[in-house]
Amino acid sequence: MSLGNRFYHARKKRGLSQEEAAENLGVSRQTISKWELDETLPDICQAQRLAGLYGVSLDELMKSDREVEEIQELIEKTEERVSKKVDWAKIWSKKYPILSTYQDEVNIGEYAAELGRLLRKLQKEYGYGELDALLVLKDILGKVWKNQDKPV
Image 1 (cartoon, rainbow, N blue to C red):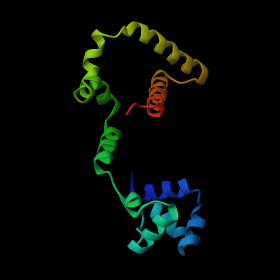
Image 2 (cartoon, helix red, strand yellow):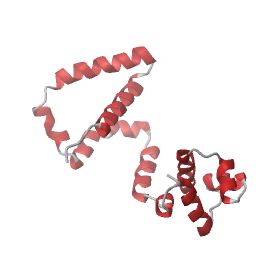
Image 3 (cartoon, rainbow, N blue to C red):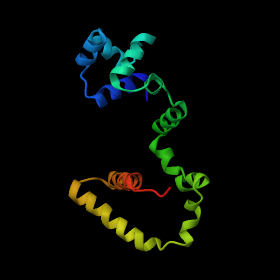
Image 4 (cartoon, one colour):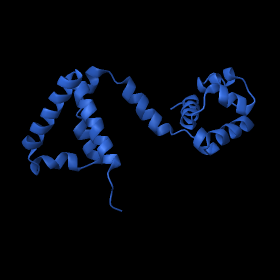
């Protein structure tokens, strides 16, 4: 995420318009816009005041997770035809070995039938194509995982 994007999201999270932020900081709305569009950067004093206004530390506001950004850029640049050739399960199994071993333990057919039913339901009720329905279902599963109470 670019620095300007972080400024934008921090402002939105705080519920402020560009005009309100500008007024609080003593700058123009256009200045806020230029910061958020990565056209210009605030000086260090302005950045400190910006962080204070948005209720975050300067470090939080300015930090860049370059490793994450590089992965995101690589995924965005990967063409669909190349992506289809990649064995994603094999790649992810290097990080999560269960992905290469569960097939011998889990009744895949049972889960596949239920997931297929959910995919068809998403397609029918919302008009999603196959891939979009799969991505929505994957995202829902991810949200369920994130929101569950995890043992310590």
